[in-house]
Length: 424
Ligand code: ATP
Ligand code: MG
Image (cartoon, protein in one colour):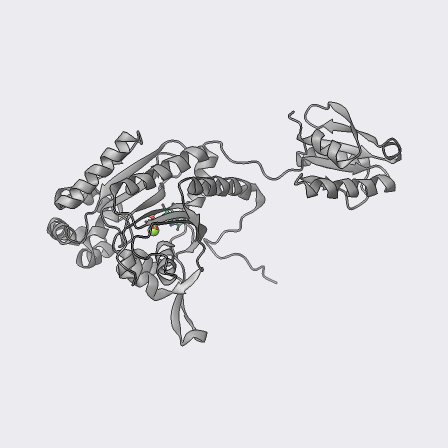
């Protein structure tokens, strides 16, 4: 029989990796809450039209990366696995009336996204993102706060050597001027652009600046800068963002050619890029302002700023910075020396587990020697052997595995709890 394997780009994850994921997730949740974001969970499957309208018709995501299929239960509506979560969040906020006049709402999410991509290091087909979206605030101080959040997240995860890149794409009024300038620049070189970019030049020249093909990147380096085509208001907004970042002492670099692969961004765009540890896929967090998306998806016009970060890439950086968390290991291994001892071990294990202490206990009547070996291999901090003598005396010897130091302890849950929780 041939073994069935997982699909390419859709990895299995085990405790060895997930210990660090859990740590990341708890730091991320705490940090989002600290910045005033509450959690939101939206479905993994949405109508395809949401992303066509939200992310944009000419984007890579919509043209070639979506897992879309007909839902036969719903009059053959075309649905897809979500490729990103901003559109879904906006849909939910609008649909449930969370964005009424003057609303200020901040939400965060963690979850899986799906894109049919060329699988390579740092690029999966099922991957996971953290993200934060803030609605109802037009002020540049929100853009600054969102970037501060990225900084604090990276800091608290122990990830250094990441540069925050910032640019402005201007707003809808500025866009045609800039698009024209880009067309005029690239048109004479059209034949040397990649096939995708030849199409992008027609549909959305901005996208050419985001191309990953080396020769296109070289050409793009000399292209006109968005910053030279901003209207007065966008210019003021950008200047205020830069001033805000500077005043808070948040390091950044202006990258005049930074654009994003999704159509909804207006004005501020930013990326956190790792200087080492990720190879070619170096962007860990990316986001910006999207003042038109809510209205575009049927809500009342509401300014917004958000970003998403790739969990896999963040975990890779934590590992590179020696910040990975050790896999689960028991605090205490209880070893029964005889039948009475094994019964007592199970009684004490239950009491300690009720208090949240991780306890390993034997289910196979192993010998004391085998259990001590197991305690050693598992990395348990303590071991305690229980036999008829210990039960009779209601005392045992708690052994600290690392040092071999033994302390006497009463065989009752409160005393054991205090002993294993005492600072070593
Ligand atoms: P890229 O330019 O790398 O394709 P993108 O513009 O498609 O990125 P976003 O949609 O803005 O990226 O996603 C934000 C973050 O999510 C990325 O910076 C990255 O960390 C992560 N990410 C995006 N696509 C993938 C993927 N296929 N596999 C793993 N992580 C991903
Ligand atoms: Mg992409």
